[in-house]
Length: 283
Ligand code: AMP
Ligand code: FE
Ligand code: FE
Ligand code: ZN
Image (cartoon, rainbow, N blue to C red; front, side, top):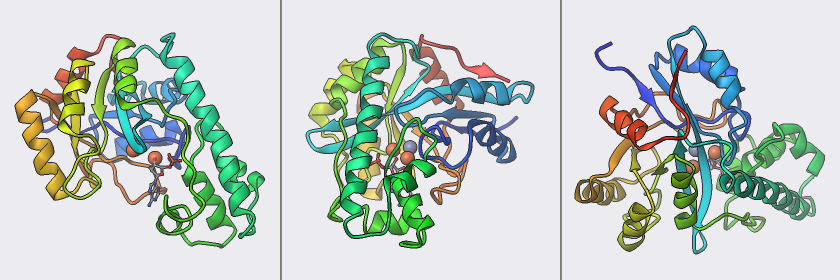
């Protein structure tokens, strides 16, 4: 293959994607991908099904996760690739995040139910039960006819300034990068420049993250602003970071399409070389 298509960021119904891991693997094959990473929010529960579904297809599966972290009050997502899923520090931390995601969603729905005809049962019915989030609340609002789409819900009722938003527990980005690196994984900051000209982290923090084991920056992502990308490219050059590009596919839950951004084989090689938790699997 002249240009193998490599997409290192995709969600399944284990978190807020709309397709099961098996369906995600089929979609990856239909999109002509050579390599896909399954990166559900704060969970590795889709790994085994994805690997099984890829068996015999020739598709390479990179086992990963998108870890929820924060820098002060700002949400920062850290992609972790090829870490040990049984790591004694990472396992309880992701369990803590998922538990708090559940109680936070329930508290948000409590507030929403004062103004809208939506119940906690509606939301539970929309979730795969592993890693719950605002997208499942959005789906319940859609099912009730209160909004038309997830995007409409996020632009209004579920917006962090929409009046119903509550944060969920998350480690600091520095602790998050350390957790992934110490579990043998390769940490990459997801969509680091979704707001204006600035990245979600500043250069001082970036240097600390690199010392803690940060491997790369996801510069190719539809939500990074043009001004922000320029900063990230400068940093990637200065600190010799791996640059990735990915779709952040969520099935029908977002407009993002598989392979709309891709990662070079060289960049993937560097990620694989940096990791020592689990191996890539070619089906
Ligand atoms: P939470 O982590 O529960 O606060 O929810 C944030 C999640 O919602 C992220 O993982 C995004 O993938 C998803 N999300 C954000 N904006 C949108 C949107 N406009 N449409 C669909 N999903 C979205
Ligand atoms: Fe998501
Ligand atoms: Fe994200
Ligand atoms: Zn994502």
